[in-house]
Amino acid sequence: MSAIAFDIPEDILAMREGLRAFAEAEILPRHEANHNLFEDQRRLYDSDGRFSEELLNLIGEVRRTASKAGYYQMCVPEELGGGGLGHLAYFVGFEELFHTCGPQNWLMLYAVSHWAFGPSRLLEKLTERARDEMLAPMMAGEKSMCFGLSEPGAGSDASRITTRAAPDGDGWRITGRKIWTSNSPVADYCVVFAVTDPDTRGGISAFLVPTNAPGFEIQRIIRLFGHIGGDEAELTLDDVRVEPWQLVGELHKGFAAALYGVSLGRIYNSARAVGYGRWALEQALDYAGVREAFGKTISEFQGVTFPLAESATELHAAHLMALNAATLLDRGDAAVKELSMAKAYAVQVGYKAVDRAMQTHGAMGFTNELGLYHAWHALRIVNVADGTNEILNRTIVQRLMKGDREL
Ligand SMILES: Cc1cc2nc3c(=O)[nH]c(=O)nc-3n(C[C@H](O)[C@H](O)[C@H](O)COP(=O)(O)OP(=O)(O)OC[C@H]3O[C@@H](n4cnc5c(N)ncnc54)[C@H](O)[C@@H]3O)c2cc1C
Image (cartoon, rainbow, N blue to C red; front, side, top):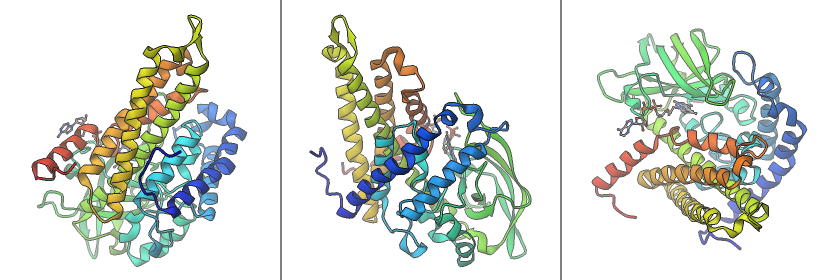
């Protein structure tokens, strides 16, 4: 029985089934076979904090296998050689992976191309030469990229970036510093946002920069709490030469590309929050049904179960909101208000659902084996990444004040 009356197209439902089977055949067994690796952070990361070769090989295997199966590139436009599925498919596919795999089987993150690490609609704006150079290996899951917008002095207010692309003959020379750039320690390319029109606020452009270009350097891997290594880094660009074929989209109009990328991130993170939240709620319900205290299962105590009922209600609402926002995007609506609401709401209730599931498990909730900690960690972070909750509220209010008051 479905809780959702939403009309999800047949091809997306079929994709969801296929993706679940793919996860069962290709993701879960890899985690089982490499249990010791995933339990040992000293093997997951090199001494400088980068993903280890052992881990990168597994990620590469998942990407390439998913590409051969057609899932990795399923949401990339057909004209770039992808499956042409849209935003709804992106949400449904990732929600399925997060929900069925659970946070500890996290190789599933690489079964569908993440918009900032692999091919997506963002690459529609590449020049012909850039497409020729990088598209085939990206689509095959052999190469990856990263998205360099945030800087030490510019996070929520990205218009404050100071990385500068100064004209140099028919091209530019880029100098600046980026931070929090996910996947940058191992990426082959970086989409770098730089100021090209210093006289206009937001006069920035996007450039495709190979990470082995002279002057491009990873300065340090950022270790987020609880981890001895990481996938985010701080990097510098020192007089990096770029040519016209490396421009992504129109000159001085890079902000639109940045916002579109972040929109994809908001769908992805809504899926992550709903999927992990549902997974955690199910863990809590199962545990409450068997754990005994005071001569009864703890599911007999409303103090235990009412918070779970609240989470179920909130996750259901978040699920519907995200399906709605993704469908609006597929119809060509920018859905700025609806997507902001969906992401901000989903990450808060998803995080709360995981926290409540931990509480339901008592001390067991804090063990690594259950994986609740992994979901808690991931969802705490996405309350900031791809637009903080406060910035999303700001966007929602701006839209409301402009008269966009349909709810
Ligand atoms: C795990 C992770 C991965 C990331 N990956 C990438 C990546 O790949 N590429 C990339 O470019 N960036 C990335 N980011 C950066 C992310 O986009 C920024 O962290 C985010 O935009 C917030 O910026 P900030 O951290 O500088 O916070 P700040 O902008 O300094 O904000 C600090 C606090 O002030 C609040 N605040 C700021 N302005 C307002 C306002 N007007 N009203 C109310 N509150 C306000 C914020 O909500 C926040 O609580 C990543 C971040 C994380 C945590």
